[in-house]
Amino acid sequence: MASNAPLPVSAIDPYSPEYLADPYSFHEALREAGPAVWLSTYDVVLMARYAEVRAALEDPATFCSSRGVGLSDFAKEEPWRPPSIILEADPPLHTRSRAVLSDALSKVSIASLAPAFEARAEQLVGDLLERGSIDGIKDLAEAFPLSVFPDAVGVVEEGRENLLPYGDMAFNAFGPRNALFEKSFENAQMVAEWIATQCERQHLSDDGIGAAIYAHADRGDVSPAEAGLLVRSLLTAGLDTTIFSIGATLFCLAHHPDQWEKLKTEPRLARSAFTEVLRFLSPAQNFYRTTTCLYRGDGFEIPADTKVLLCLGAANRDPRHWDAPDHFDISRRATGHVGFGYGIHACVGQQIARLEGEAVIKALASRVATIELAGEPVRRINNTLYGYDSIPLRLT
Ligand code: HEM
Image (tube, rainbow, N blue to C red; front, side, top):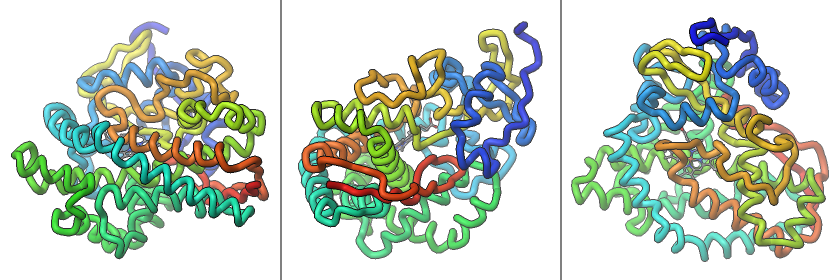
């Protein structure tokens, strides 16, 4: 393709019910259409190949986040809430916010959480094993993060039922104002107010990650209002993502008995198993960038001021980069996947996410002999997240 050849156009709508029900059946067509494709429905560009997605993630000066990482362009439309000062920010604001969250979520604080997380996973899996028949989502994928993450941040007990609806709103809001968006925003005001209140210092415990963020406000690294917004980032990004990833783990292990056997024989594969799940069934399927200037890629151009959808889920299965990409293999070296993003915005909570995912996998591998589907899994449909609402399982 000549450098100035027009981009191929695709009529695929990544928010149609068919696409959201099974995005993986559309990814190949999007990857094969070209390194970058105009989506006629939304007048945005989509990238689905690994090399292009990763190049965009590694070039935040050209592909900025401050105009929103969803479909909406903050330069043209009012955001639904005050933008995140980390996810929806560019340097230098992003650099400052990132330093604060990185410190609050540092290796030291994660290491101190590990014993409690592992003990909780062991206890929960032990209880579920006694029951035998469970819903993998409600009973484990939701129950586990809900019982460790809000405590780790320091959120009050009362009202925690608002946490999941808030995540659902936020991840739907990265897409268009479709029926999913409208439905998740039915109680938006009440839910958003509860979240905003819990992010205030006086409502947080004095020994959690939230308090560690406010300690930076005392040092003058951020203002108290900014500290509150950073706590909000954790409550937005830290729960649905881990729930969907643990759900995907259960789905993959129940669907691939050979991989379950491999894990049973080699429990040290827990880490690479979780990494492979994030590649194979990426919970966060899409994030956008906006071009700040003309972008010249390898044989194509994207004009300035263009919204660009980076299809992480498709990049993670691009045969140009991965051998047998549709094969789930827990001993694969899946590092380099973009399920946590890449570059300066790569998931700042990935250590805590891994701690949670690996704690569940280790507890399953050490206590459970067989894990089988006991009914049809039901998908949960969201504009950004890919995952399940229910996975009936039988554990022995
Ligand atoms: C398996 C679970 C998770 C997945 C799949 C995931 C995925 C992602 C992805 C793809 C990004 C990059 C977004 C972009 O480039 O625009 C990201 C960023 C982020 N994640 Fe996660 N995440 C997970 C868990 C968590 C947890 C547990 C937390 C909080 C403790 C968290 C907090 C954040 C924050 C604050 C950012 C913004 C970072 C920045 O802009 O510098 N995430 N995550």
